[in-house]
Amino acid sequence: MTGAEGRDPAVRSAVRQGVSVAVATGLYGVSFGALSVVAGVSVPQTMALSLLLFSGGSQFALIGVVAAGGSPVAAVATSTLLGVRNALYGAVVAPLLGVRGWRRLAAAHLTIDESTAVAVGQREPAATRAGFWVTGAGVFVLWNAFTLLGALAGDALGDPRAWGLDAAAGAAFLALVWPRLAARRAQVVAALAVAVTAALIPVVPAGVPVLAAAAVAIVAGLVATPRAGAGTGAAA
Image (cartoon, rainbow, N blue to C red; front, top):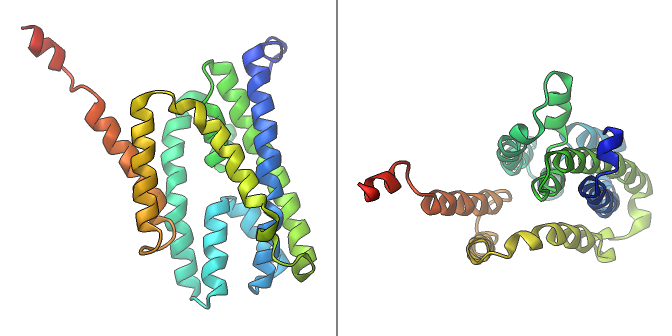
């Protein structure tokens, strides 16, 4: 980030958003670390998941299958299914960042729910880039640090879900999304996505509800976008 960008109010706002989201999300890593070890995954394996997979939902899905006695194949398949959403995020943020070479690889690894939400929530290109990198890097560092803390503490932490850290991360994400729901169409799409997700959670594997919610948004976008040439035909 250049000096000029650092003085830009929009960039400073994006950085503040990124830091706040990184702290809220990173703290939740202690829950993953503790639950992973309790499920029978070793500390090195737990850290490898956070460092290399680095997708909270996919990580929780994997250890959930392991804890339930599922096979490694089932655990990987469930985790991969939920991680498909990151590929969709990549298609959104790639043109916004315009990175090449090793930066493209780094950006791909840091493309998660939170970094995408902060990036697309900005109105200026410089703020978009700053928000993405600050959020992605911040979550990566803090998530792994607190994953290690949770993994080392293990059973001593009790059930970390009772602390409400999942709610803190969710609240931070909702705070980012909420301003984007001012338009009536966005509210309708969000309501449909929530309804579809809630209906599917009890009956389908983890990851499918998230993909279904994304499909709702994609279909809504396709239906709402005028077909090319429609306006020209009407005028003729």
